[in-house]
Image (cartoon, rainbow, N blue to C red):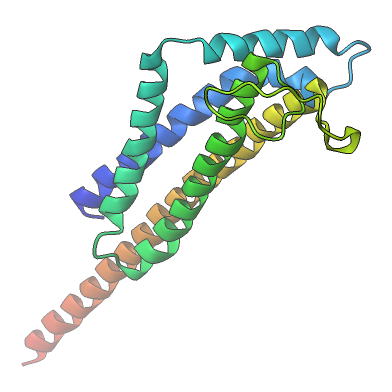
Length: 203
């Protein structure tokens, strides 16, 4: 593996582990909302709701750091996929698809969910920046309750974590495949060199 590819892999793995750490810190808030059935879930819904409101009210520098980390990962993929080899196309291409799927989940579910929870406009079909449309006109079948909204948010965190783990697995698979290939090439070169030396001795 070249030094450029090693650095690009670091640019991918670093942000991915950073995002997994953020998701792991959110797991205590999501657990009782999504994964367990306590007798009374209302306190846990309230805790998660307050947590999300606090995150959404965080200083702008927090979101900027997060977006810089996302961009760093994309830069790593672009570096590795510049003049790609077959292995790059297979492993890095699949990793990039998963990474972009994670970004899509972040934009469509996480960011929108934070806005909905902060505004308290549960059941609203579309939340537009700068607008606050009441959900009184929505049909009962279309209404998404506060509990369901928070469950969807917790499920989105789980989906995002699985996607990011998939990125790490593919990067580890690429490293293993390249290591095996380099070992096989080195072994073939060694055997060829021994045959060459044996041929010279016979002469």
